Image (cartoon, rainbow, N blue to C red; front, side, top):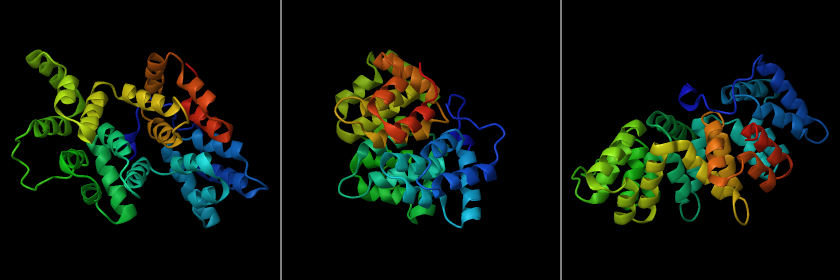
Amino acid sequence: MASAWVGVKGTVKDAPGFNAGKDADSVRKAIKGLGTDEDSLINILTQRSNAQRQLIAKEYQAACGKELKDDLKGDLSGNLEHLMVSLILSPALFDAKQIKKSMKGTGTTESILIEILASRTSKQMKDVGDAYYTAYGKSLGDEISSETSGDFRKALLFLANVLYNAGEKKWGTDEDKFIEVLCLRSFPQLRLTFEEYKKVSNKTIEESIAGEISGHLEDLLLAIVKCARNTPAFFAERLHKSLKGAGTDEFTLTRIMVSRSEADLLDIRSEYKKLAGYSLHSAIKSDTSGDYGAALLKLCGGDD
């Protein structure tokens, strides 16, 4: 079921008059000819919904006997390859792969773990957990457990919907209380909680977290608060960071553009404009180039 991943504020929708076989054939021609026809690939893969792309990949494999993602990897390179391959994964598998990548090699990239686990619903996280197990034969909870530690780990495990039963039910510290409230409630509940909290303590929840907690746990809890208050604003800020300053963080840029394109990218665009004073479209245009930039602009949709 893709429905947990599709929102009304996406820039990418089901293409009308869709024909998976016809698209698969066009994709095959784009890859097989002399030199790859990137324009054609980009036009098809960025202008179909994820559910439609899955069907194209299925038809492609039936016709060619090879996986579309393997052929894309063989024919493209760099950022464009990463973007095109990302587009044909299911949203849950895409998240699972990003999480796996964040925990690979030396040191964990906590910011990726935080971004995904703070912003996904529990239904989405269940799908991600299933996809993770299917892809890697390991439980997401076990992997998080072995790669992280302390209260940060405890909070991540709550978000990954893994019941943490190492006798941790004695909510002693302030960290525990924050974790319990922030990780076990839905966003609408949290927004009400924040209002009450402010009345009772004369402080915002952000001020309290910043005052009492530090490190990755602080980053995670603040990310949950931001997402609960305004998820598109949270992503606009992440995009702004990835596009600003010396060097573009293409990995983050690709991840957010792909994962939010069917959910709330329209709202993210308007939050981006509020935050930066210029449009996401113009930021992508000035910071990226070539086919990769062109594909991102297609996902972005219009200019604001």
